[in-house]
Image (cartoon, rainbow, N blue to C red; front, side, top):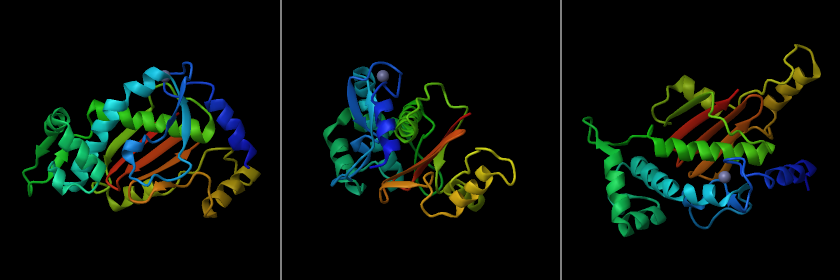
Length: 231
Ligand SMILES: [Zn+2]
């Protein structure tokens, strides 16, 4: 077993990764509402307090449905790919109403556009990003990120997509010729870079976390993309 993992597990069992409070429960990152059954084994788990754990669950449900509707370009449950999301939409009229508020019909070809920059979506993405930093590095980032971007993979130019997909090089000791400098290049060449994309469920959820500064990138349903940065 990786001893670093053990140390980190102890660290993030010691605080709620979302508010810094006492962790009374443990929680999956991402929440299972963003994944399909059968769930992947060994999902990341972090410490969380009860109020953060409960406080986000409605937002996460909304987020999962909004992203699926946007990705499938429809608010009709029959047109959605994710069975669990279609079921939620059918069973909850209030959720269906909330989603229809978040959606607007575009003039171009009638595409469904979910307003991705709304507070709920950003709140959930930020929570996910904090959870991933805590899980990977045992650190809590409670401040607001210094930079954030939320959008879709489809809207990126080829150049920005390439940049987004490439793991950033952590700024360790940037002197040319130092061991850290060569290690940075070794990391870049190596397929097993610890800062490369972690695919939790193919086509459904992947993320990347890089240290110094903390950069978190997320892709949900190969549709929604986000980047957060804490300097
Ligand atoms: Zn909390």
